[in-house]
Length: 153
Image (cartoon, rainbow, N blue to C red; front, side, top):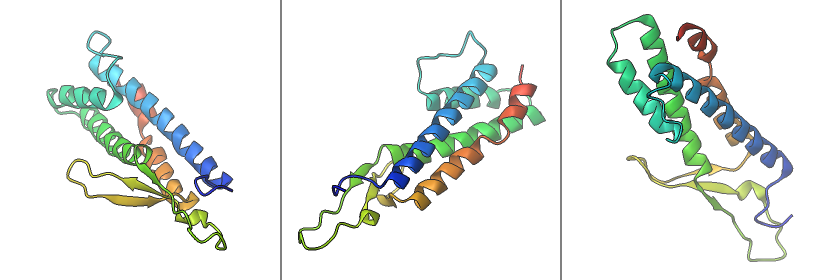
């Protein structure tokens, strides 16, 4: 395997992360459209902007359990999408062993997460385990979506 290639199990988990993101963004778009209504929903905006608009709309509504549940859900999704952005827009870091007698260790692959929004630089190991944690956070953020779909007009 070339030093800049990932093992199949890591690529498989990266695919699972991608699928979790696709589903989460789709569910978020649906909730935002329900909150904002068709006349105020702009399908051309990125999903995070739609979430911001829906949260602003919800903040202006009278207090209710439904408003609070939708606000909590969208806030959780927004945090999960921030983590997704950090991982999927990170820089790949590949250790290239200069001594040809030494074998390349794929466990040294990492993602360099650039500083944004007051956060400092960090690195995410490109392993099944670390990507699995991210995937579980994305999957967990979906929790409650069905109840909101049924409750929102």
